Structure formats: C-alpha cells, structure tokens
Length: 282
Image (cartoon, rainbow, N blue to C red; front, side, top):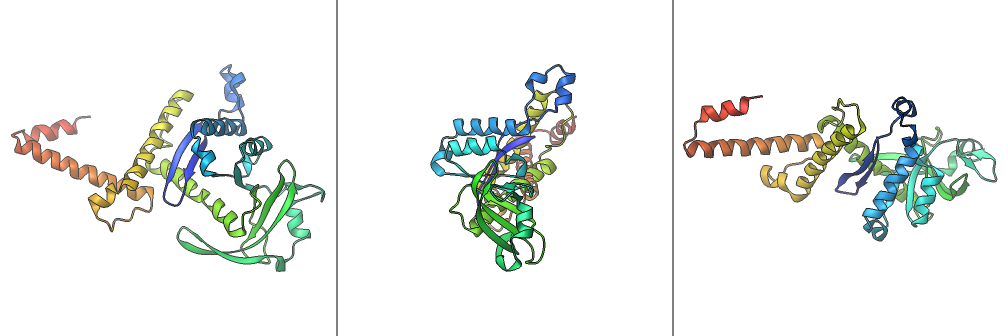
C-alpha cells in the first residue's frame, strides 16, 4: 500500500492510496506492463493531489516521507512546484565533494561537542535529543539542510533528517518530521479498528474498495470529533485521544439512539419482541 495523508495539530486524514503489486504477481497474471515501483506510485499520487487540491500551493504545505521515497524523481517533482519536504535519509547517502556518506561524516568529522541538547514533545511526553544541523550537498538532492539526531552526545546517530527548506531551524525540522507519528498512528488505528487488514479478496479492485471503506470510516469518526458530536453526546470532559476511544464513543452513541428508537416504536404500539427478533436475524 502506498498512500498520502494529511495531518496538522488537530486533524489526520487519509487522502489517496494505491496498491503496490509485485512484479512476479503481474507476470503470473500476464499484466507485467502495469508494473510500477512504489516510488512511481507515489509520484502518481502526488500529481493527483496537486491536480485536485490547488490549495496545497496556496498553503505551502510541507511533504513528509521516509527514506524509501527520498528519490530524485519525487524531489524534482516537488521542486518543480516550489514545494518543501522533510524526510529521513539513509545513512549511506553520499555527500558531494567530500566522497563520504552521512554516516562516515558523523563518525569522522563531527565531535560530541558539536551537538546541541534540545527538548520536544512526542505523544504528550517531553523527549530529549542531541542535534547538529548544517547544509550539505547530497547526491541526487542538491543542497539540503541535514539534521544529525541522537539520544545522547556520545552515542550513535539515530536519524538523519533532510529538507530542501534551508530556512528551517533545528526545532522546526524535527517538529515537522515528528508529525509523521500522527500518520503512523492513524494508519495503525485504521488497521486495528477500521478493519483495514480484514480483506480476503484476490483482485486489485476489491482490495481498493475495501481500503476506501476503511478510510471513509476513519475519516467519518474524525469528522464527528471535529464537529463536537462526541462532546455534545458524552459531555465536554470526553477525551478521545485515540481512534479506539472514538470507535467506542461512536458505538455508545449509536446504541443510545437505538434504544431511543426502540422505545418510540414501543410507545407507538409496535410489538417489542417482534422488533428484537428482527434485529437478531443474520
């Protein structure tokens, strides 16, 4: 699955998706001409996004992705539209003119004293990290801001973050990238609570149909939360910090409305046993 998501301080939505089909599978089906790599699928999704959501250009949104999608073709596509990105980079990315990788640069050039201690929030908890940020010419990327991130000053690098937005501060770069956590959480929640993994079909159309319904259910719950439906029904003290809590809250609301409907039918002279028997049917 290759997908595009939107997230900010209060919202997290699934936007677009496509299925990655292995080359061997398409060869068996005689459809090898339809093969696309994950990077090519991502390019198609980005183009679709840019064509159908012009507000992206106006709001100057930042694109976030992991090292797998930090490919020249995607970088060029975003730069053609004057869009910024933040991504994790693999440790073997080459630094032009120095003939060394990011990992080698961190081990041979940087000293513990070069790193600065910072604190940031993740999942509501304060985290401490040590960072060093500079601008380097990276192969296939050009000049980018690189953030070397580790948990303690004498330890190894935990992550190499890069961005074509050279004006970002260390804190801004890290804060941008950690927004991916909301996307990862939303994806896992959709698998756990929205039945994302519960499909047993063989064709691509059926899989996409199932994924669409799962994502619609997830977005619907997000929409109800933003409208304040849960707070209105369950009280302003209702804290729905996870998708699981939203699901349980929605089930509670639906059950209450079901009981209200049953009560009205009974008041109107309907046979209660007959109604309940109807709802017990498979």
